[in-house]
Image (cartoon, rainbow, N blue to C red; front, side, top):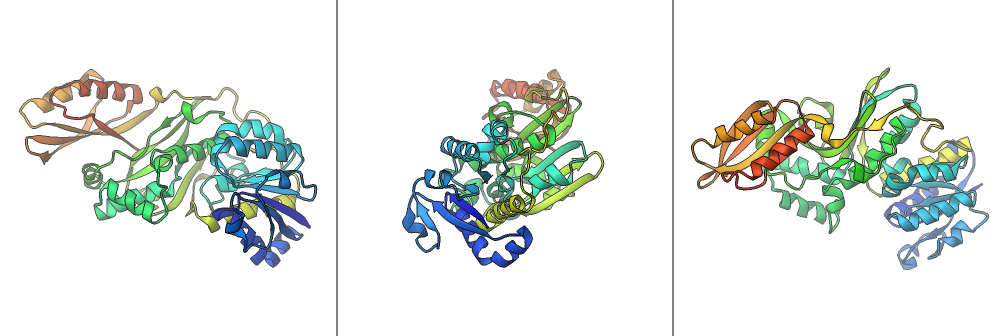
Length: 419
């Protein structure tokens, strides 16, 4: 019998306990032995008084229990979970976590501490989608050329509503909060930080890149308006928040941002709260993984799958899937050097000669314009909407700063990358 302790018996933790109890027979058959939750830790024991496990408020009651074989960490946050996971590993206990923020900052240090002790984290990225095992095991014969993913269901729900219903950003955000898809403070989701943490975990497995969130390009969806939606539709695009990891020679670019994506692309068809991740390998080509990216049962399904895997296969090392550097000399590409096509929205005074003045700035920065549309917005002003050919981040940002200094430009330019 394998005994499990769950630290953080919230929505996901409760589902873990219930799945292990209610699906006991099939889990026993698949793992080879019975798995039981011996105890759990939660701040408010009254909320889980209906569960048939011992409940405590002190993580040490699990970490110091010699009968506990596997510790499931579902606390959220970084500092306290780091202490909990470190102690669990040093006490020789296997660990399963869904904590993406913890891994975004401490994955390599934790792998070193874990050594041969099983440490699994499938639920940290894309909820119920088995993307970690796909990258670490199923695609292990491949050089990974790129990873492109919709990794945040909140943003995908909001952008789908904006595209399909013509709703304003503030309206769909309020709806997402009412439905429980977005927190009261939604910054972590809509600002792109949640997706960035997940992308860093995947990039570590694919490339061995040891980067932190502060080193990568991260933007959210806060500035998107119906003017941008209209442009996207007119030119056959949809708008998605994407996490992108891509190898370019000896460099790997990591970025999270809103993107104009061709309506024909597979990933463009992933709507609502669902997640989807495209992985391109040098041998297998493109593979696409789709499913629920959050929610108690979906995330708990991945947690329990990790528990079963530990019980069935014994020790698993290393945590990230490699002992030695995957690619000698690989380094993180500077955000300034990333190349993309761009969409720009400007609100300008509607007067003669302004378009010529602005297009001259494009030419000064060696940025070629692919398309331009002018749309009225309010009295005596207009929206100028541009699509460019490929340029660098440095050149587009320098030009945007110059645009802000022009008196006919009435507000800061807004930019979305075209994928």
